[in-house]
Length: 496
Image 1 (cartoon, rainbow, N blue to C red):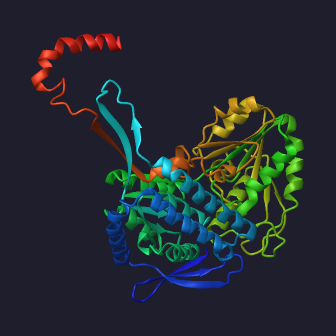
Image 2: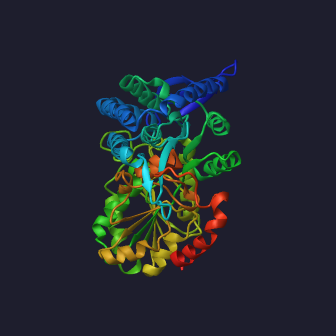
Image 3: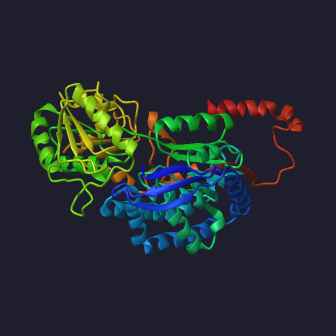
């Protein structure tokens, strides 16, 4: 792990952070106590009562200052991400870019998405109806370790733009970047009371979910934990957004540009050492082009190396437990007949890229989320089998489809069971920040990003007003008997 959890004699918990690529110690962080969490929530709840009344344009100006400050601290953020995750600088750069683009897009969308929206009055022409969007109050963001900046600040900004105050609980393994983002927010906005970062273990996350002082939960992480949170929120009737695990499939058809597809698979499978929820984890290739594609894939994978040096393309696996899980999946596949090619030697927690062929759905690498630098490639007979295998999963986050025929791509996309379909590319759905992100099945509930992300942190309320001030309505007791016959005729004429 990239943090050792130590309990002091007096019961206080200390997070001892270190760099997973070098194992150098970084910093020790004192975890909040349960009383400390309650005090933070009290403050956020008090501020939420005032902040909800601030106009959207004021919130947008606040977030714009934060975004510009993040850009000014680009190098500092890049160093922090690399140090506590083991990522390569180019991967940290992409994470910062993603965060800034999501924030910029949310700023642009907030004024139109959150404004009052008038609806048709139908037959009640003397009435006027509209929908308005209110914040929940205190929004809780519980984020994982693989993207310590993006998965904290992106949902936090959407919640803040919607008018909530935010309690962010980052992973205990990657807390330093979240604390740096908090410092940048405070200095840029002068509003430290709106956004709190709560360092600590999973116990704090459980406290936040159960607390009556939190009003909406956003969790990004494993399906197992997400389901537990969903059950607890259901008991409390507390709204929840869950972005959970994936086992994202890639389909390669005979009319695809194979060279591009191979490069896409390699980048989609090995970037960030495969530790991305929308990574390419399983590839289905139709038989006529299988051998050619695998040869291209082997050549592209052979260009990569893993290690600490700058010229190594693949960074470290962030957690020791994750390293062990990846190896267990690979060992399971090999024991069941898969052919395994390893492109390099392990170096600490730097795992070389692994290419698996001869796989099937009896193997964990094809059914369970691996989250590591391995690609499993399976031969299928045709398009029909490719679609069936891609859909044969408990997950439903993203699917990647490679074909040279646009009409064919649209037709197949309609049959793929996932929250996103990307044609002839991989992972770019995250960079297109106006699109909602979220899965189906075991990959989650609700959406982040785009207008849908802002609305995930908003209550919708209907308001009806009178255009004309009448002394009474036709359906009031004084008139209903007199107008019964007329109303009856109207209904038959209007709806018949």
